[in-house]
Amino acid sequence: MKIHKFTFNPIEENTYLLYDESGSCIIVDAGCYTRGEQEELTNFINEEGLIPEKIINTHGHFDHLLGNSFCREKYHIPFYIHKDDVDMVAGADNMAEFFGIPLKPISPPDGLLKEGTKITLGKSFLEVIHLPGHSPGGVAFYNKEQNFLLSGDSLFRGGIGRTDFPGGNENNLIKAIKEKVMVLPEKTIIYTGHGPETTVKIEKETNQFLL
Image 1 (cartoon, rainbow, N blue to C red):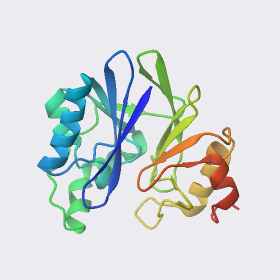
Image 2 (cartoon, rainbow, N blue to C red; image 1 turned 90 degrees about the horizontal axis):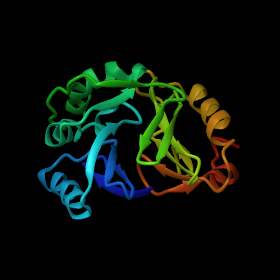
Image 3 (cartoon, one colour; image 1 turned 30 degrees about the vertical axis):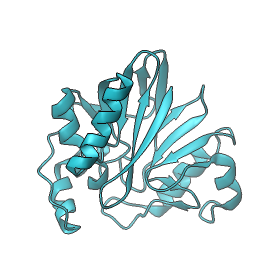
């Protein structure tokens, strides 16, 4: 499985495209907002000869949903998110407006994720890990074979996601990270929702929130 990172929209959110030799791909956190960003995503998909299968979201904050409607309409693919963040999807346009970013209402998800859900891509799969705290339905996507985790906004290099939004809880977030992420192999690469990648080892040794 290959991973390509895009950084999109005014919030500088990381969108990931996962793909393999089958030619299928999954869009994680579709954040493309401007026409130029939409073209950047579609051009890469076209150049690699990929066929998008689905959109999966680590959580329901608007900056991770800004390209959601475009991708669903462009590729006629379903969108999945944890059940506890469905209400956030419904209110994403209002949250975006608060940040001065126009966004049309987003249609409800086509399916729901939960702890332990297996998301397949060709011969590989991602396991859903529920990490509530940044949002009630925050999740990470873990691939054991290749030792990587897509953490969304739950965990960053040297930090954790902010917990002052509605539904946030710092204690719950730290507990979830320690019990579900820090127990993974230390070489596990963590692809974050904003900023650079990190590893379990680095966060164990340096993240002040987890020491």
